[in-house]
Image (cartoon, rainbow over all chains, first blue to last red; front, side):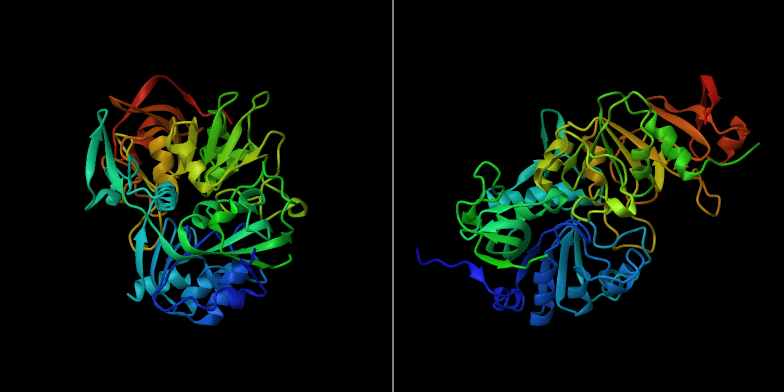
Length: 237
Length: 220
């Protein structure tokens, strides 16, 4: 077989991300499942006008020092570098933090657009795209700002909102192990948004702690089948 | 002695609501503290919306693993029988009614049990996270909150003025001054902090409170 999904570096794996691309980024918050090496490679690659779909907008390097004194990078680096035009997610900024995360500053200056999506609706909109569905009806958001301008339907006496699928040009994913075909397993809560995003993009790029030969992973525990994975980079931790 | 309960005591009181064998989700902030106050003799399965069921308590510095965190980004400890799943499956569990209790922080709760817990004036970029899904799907919603703002304004109000999380979802409110049940007839004052009177609590509450027949002091 001539298909080779293995890339030597994160820089090579994200080299063709273009200006204006829509990118899903796995993970949950600042830790545990964030594909941080791919994010930093994208920050250095400098693609602009990106639409980023992720659960959280990141706190950025300055605010991160409140959590770990030495500071760390998260998704905030893409906002710090001015690469993002629009963010779609459930927690652009944290209410418990000062209003100085990169995304919140840019939003307040009118320099970035935000589409706020309830977290479960975010996951399901992505799963819809992954599975070729045109949308779904959910009760989440009824009576709130989320229902504005959306089709509503009463099913079995209960009110629901129509939510539409979310797809992307690229997905940046963090997994624990991949085999060289691209089958993936995750570690603990670092799974979170990664499996569903891995299934929903045109090009899925994965950074893994371990790359193993085909046959090494127990087929019963593979979470993401290789058909969804296009590029793999091993970043030993 | 007249004082307001601290956050740990509010969490302790909230944790007494967890029935043996129940599945409980703890929201961002103060609710997370409930993990360390499970009443003796009861088993509670904590669900975390980032994809975990059945974790232990909060991890000490030596135990920290940043690939095992709760939804507040805090490392937690393992517990036998725990399991992991992805975000889409996690919210199936939540929307589908498989989580018995959720404890959420609140900026405001209304007389009808409407909850506002994610947006406030001047902070348009803060998000609702999983709060709307949890408030809509969980079997029972407990709101833990401070009774008033720093300026002394009531947070238990006739109608919420902050953006809503979900309508008519809260069943119990636990504050630093009182425990209040939301009923179809309105808010029922069940317990009050030591040293406070019903009149004092009412004067700090915009919505009308009906004292319960068995009104008592919060046991500390």
